[in-house]
Image 1 (cartoon, rainbow, N blue to C red):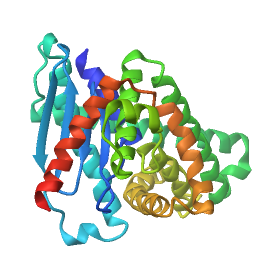
Image 2 (cartoon, rainbow, N blue to C red):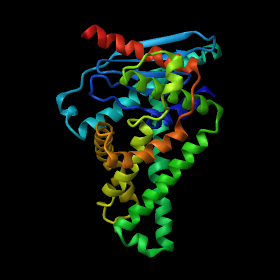
Image 3 (tube, rainbow, N blue to C red):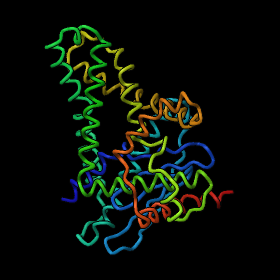
Image 4 (tube, rainbow, N blue to C red):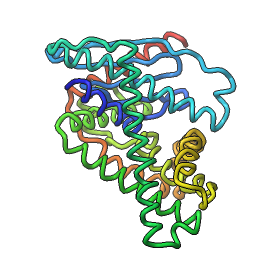
Length: 316
């Protein structure tokens, strides 16, 4: 069913988002169903290749954020929320165009909310509840784990990372997800070319640029894994299971905000050897969430980028 295809795409949003940077040349983006979404400082756009081969493009202006949401940590929470909400809108548009021949139209607000809720529920179950529950079982077998907050959260973090790796590796084997990962690679290549001031030609981009990008959501989630171990270690180890679970949900915004700041810092200091050592695992992990795109997929990413760049040029 198309609904479940959309759910799978929504679940992958945090993995394939390249976060927007405040730098003048930086843009962000996400891969969607048979297309790419790009985001600049004032607009976002999405380009999709329909089943008939035609290109479909949508562009909208962004609402400006209140000043309070531009301060460190809070801006990270806002960026993640924006990435998810824009991603769902882009997936809605892409699904309606990619599956147009199947009679698929735009989602109603109720269906969109349901899709988001189901995807969030699955994500929380997989990456919060399940690791916590399995760590609890480990603590029964190995009492030292349940008697130390640090030990408990290190095991919890390792299990969460393992679930994450298994999920990313598994979904990459599905045909449709492989296409999504190819568009993810196209998005990264195009952003690399634009930020490097290079010629925006598909054949040049395909040959010259990597499918890995330091601001990718995959790298962001790897940072989240590390930061969550540190933050969750503040939770008393003697709390019961329900309190540990609920406290993790409450702390998710803080973890996301701090992780975003680390991601921004690593992108800003990408030439630093120590920073590169820290960033390297995230880039390696992107080999699981990106695939080499063909030129037609790069053209789709370029179409989305041009919509954003044109507006930036008009504002100059």
